[in-house]
Image (cartoon, rainbow, N blue to C red; front, side, top):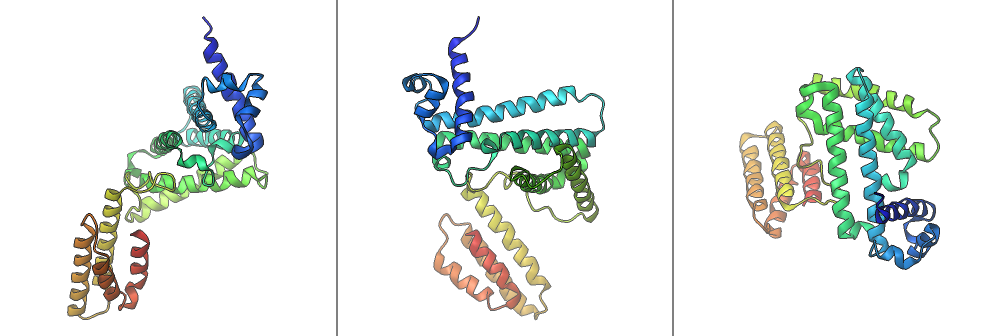
Length: 294
């Protein structure tokens, strides 16, 4: 039996998506969407309380369709190599994002990012996307990349975002299939270099999820500062200074560690400690970065 209410909702979502893309978030109104649907505005308000709620629903629907299409792609892949599977997945994301660019951007300038419902949906979307990208690279390279998986994902997402932006601006003439191959080859070089060098990873599972819409929580911030001060301590041991000087600097770092463990660090003490560290030229860049982290 056909659910008429569900059909009506799907029509509104489909039409609203087109109106938002054509007019933008600010200019599109519920009246515009109602007229495009051939409905009274009140009919839409029976399903969606506000333009923000409707926009959030369209945003969520757009991503749900993307993930379902991605799963369908995987079911149709057949017997292909892991790298070819990765290339096809990237080609799919490039094409789908290009076709739905408005709803797959980061919305940095829109007031919708302060809407609680939208932020909840956005966080869920971001977590799902990160998990998908993680799984894509795990399937291509196996558990040997486990230590560096989130750095690999971050590097890939940065490349993907930049090239999609250029493609959206119509300055890339390359077909998406060829662009996907280009990205796979670049990532392969990066992954192999990371595995060869065996350096210390930069990102972990807790830090990867934070950005401008999803700000860092206090626990993660404290852990980041703790890890950073450990790096400062290691740098101090490498300084061409007398032992007693390095010892004094280490004591100051320990005091900073102790202070930043407090619920509310004493700003005066932090300033005194960091000012002392700044007397050493080699440590000044570290102090400036610490200021940016607090």
